[in-house]
Amino acid sequence: MVEDGALRIPPEFRALVVGLLMYEGGPDAVPPQLHDTLADVARQAYAAHSELVHGTPTPPRSVDVVIGKPASIGVAVGTG
Image 1 (cartoon, rainbow, N blue to C red):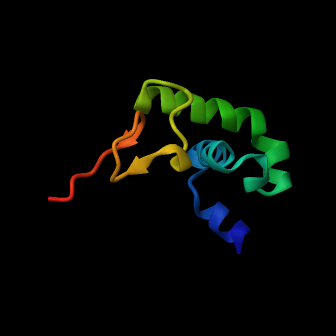
Image 2: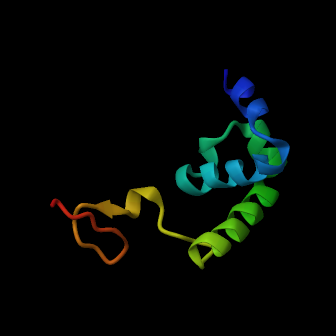
């Protein structure tokens, strides 16, 4: 099932997606064969993408973002 989904990702985005998964969930977030094959390229792809999008190769992880409460990082959402 995971392999079927992975094959649907266009080849030019696979390293980026693996890098995102590893950044958010750690090395165990991807199957070992993907990690062993793509780890270095995936980290580089995600860091380069993050630099373009966020201005840093290490943006806040999703668990660090607070929605609905003022925080030093993340997004504050109004209630009205």
